[in-house]
Length: 110
Image 1 (cartoon, helix red, strand yellow):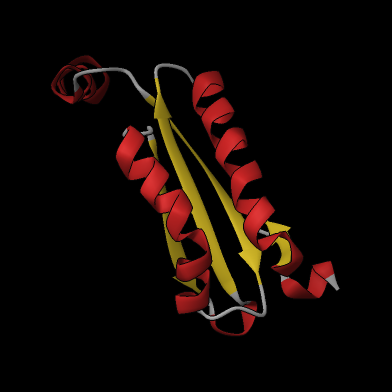
Image 2 (spheres, rainbow, N blue to C red; image 1 turned 120 degrees about the horizontal axis):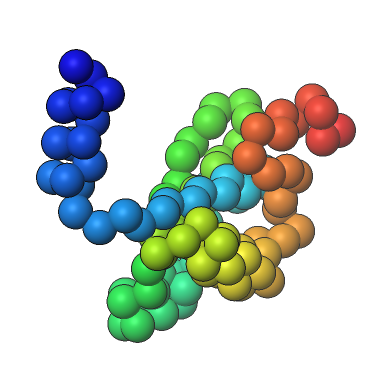
C-alpha cells in the first residue's frame, strides 16, 4: 500500500522534482554577529538577485559556527554548481577562519 498509493500521492502533491543540495562550512574565531556582518554583502546579493540559495548560521558550541549553504535546482548537478559558486564567495570573506567542511570535527582538523 505504501509503495502503490501513499508514496505516489505524496510525490504528486510535492509538485516539481527539484533537487536540494547542502554544504556546511565549519569556522572558528568569529562570533555569529561578526560572521553576519562580514557576509552581509553576500546576503544582499542573494536577496537582490533572488538566487536559488540560502545561507544559515548554526552555533555549535565548542565546535565553532557552521555556515550552511543550501541550493535548490532542477538537478543535483545544477544545485551543486550553485553551491560551489557561493561557497567560493563565502571563502573569500571568511577563509582564514574555516577549519573544515560538512562533518569534519575540530579534533580531526587539528
